[in-house]
Image 1 (cartoon, rainbow, N blue to C red):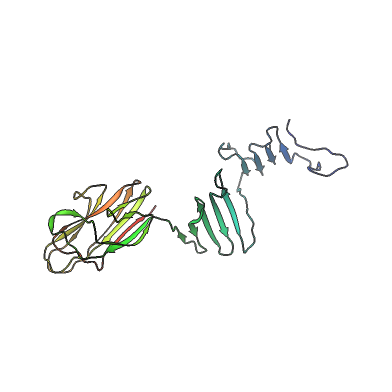
Image 2: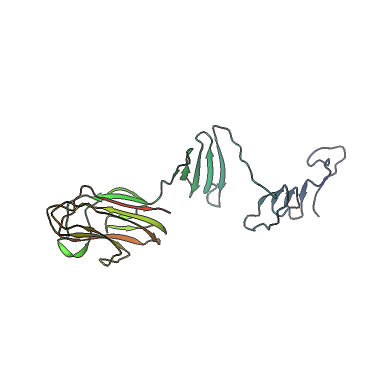
Length: 259
């Protein structure tokens, strides 16, 4: 039967019998309730809320029919932690608040700072898939038929290894909304026009997104920015057709996961 009081005449160890109501209840399932009959392994209640407890989060419950919460207190030069573990890793994930820096860090897959919020509220995600590069040589298609660009791309940053230089293809590692940006410069020694295309998942020359370099014996520097929903392992390629050369200077290619 549930244990609500312990009577031990002449002794004051363990649970003291000095209250005028049931303060702590331990039921036959070894669940502990403070302020209430327990509905969880440890149930702390200030006042009752008309709500059931989800069975995936019924080990520790804090209940109050009003504002409710818990506090982690730490030294002002140290950190407070909430950790998540499993059979393989006792700290596979977690949340850490650094009092010395007034910063919060999130741990995922046993590594801290997967996401970090600094004291000014600025959010950084160092592992966010990001590519930054540019054309590193002068080239032209010399054709009126779309040609996939298979060379001449230099990498400045390739977080998440989206860009594969062996097939000059950008493959996204996770589903989400991605930004694609390309800036090019057309040579001024050719009066013909040219097109630079973003091709997704093998569209080839039948593309949705195209930037046109104008006709005339003049330099031209068009750019294109596209935000597109992508599934994991979707990919993007660059196609070019036209006779003008593309200059290596003043070009930029950016691909980034927005969220």
